[in-house]
Image (tube, rainbow, N blue to C red; front, top):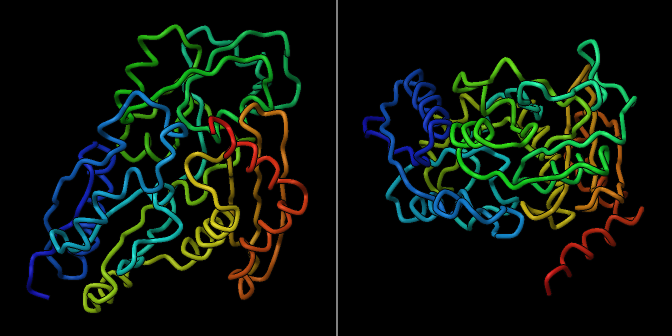
Length: 319
């Protein structure tokens, strides 16, 4: 392939890092590429919480349009931001090997982590329920899980790129903020004053980079297939099938994690009401050969347990 491939990306440091990673992977296949920077709706409006905006593909739509209009040849996304139904004419070109899927808590000096149940480097359920604590996040999923565990805590909205959110935390009177581990670790800004939230279930496909291309660009799709990671592809597809079957998106507190171990796919999923009071969860283990239906079947099971009532309640808020 002699043409210079145009890789579409958002302008943030993290998005640029992800696009450069794909650029290097293409170079290993003997393909030259350049980065094309585009702004998304999610980058322009930094005040309204994501779950209130309720827009599918808020971070990906501009890149999808550019891809369909052939202004770019590939688009690089954080996979958790990609709608479960891709635009007509687009397809997954590659799913890169997953980095950390975990959420982390970045805390201020003096924050009482022991009251949260973090002792000797581990999370326990021994929580001081009377402790006051203010945590910041724009994610309704993180908010719901936090309030399920810590019912009296306050939640503040925190929007922006990784660096601006860290700056806002430092300048605020909040005790802590929640971030995706992969985002901070990729650009080398994870603070020492942070801990993994091992008890928090991630967003579907969290920690994964996705490359989108046009369905009719067969040569380029063949090149990208060389750096597709099969296990990550299988796991994130199950997680996204779970999300899609629940008809969820960024405005829904839906979590999922699938992992391949010894030829088996281990799946966990949950739906939690935004106030944290109601929680419905599921765990399944199936052979990798049967993984294609795992996410959808898990979704049907949580719906049968009453998740549909939580989802309907969320949709009716504000109508």
